[in-house]
Length: 180
Image (cartoon, rainbow, N blue to C red; front, side):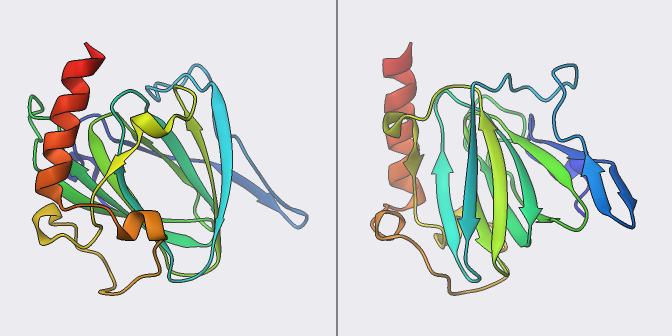
């Protein structure tokens, strides 16, 4: 597991307590009193096949609060916030359904998910899903400096058509100006 000091500023990784017995387990995945940085207004459930990579995406407005409920994923992160002390920092976080943890990803931190096996993740967002708030770049752009575990991945046609990191930074800067 990655040390939180190695994560971009504002990315929080919270270990969750799984209460297990011979019937299975019970885990609290969210409490409003926890300092997650996200007050959820929408929850989403996503299933992914082995070898799928979703992203890399970044949001201008909304924050994500995400849990890998089943399976295993590598979460790639890259801080695109020019005013952040961790601007340009990249990290890879391993998450799995066997050892539950929740990750908060603030606006301006690009992220993608590589699924090693059939997986399911649950995530909450701080703002309703809006395609105008979902920018992206090629997951395999070397400028991202994300140490992905695989050199090949199954990606969506939309993600395959995404530009490189340089174009994403320009698009993000323009979106931030228009959001003011």
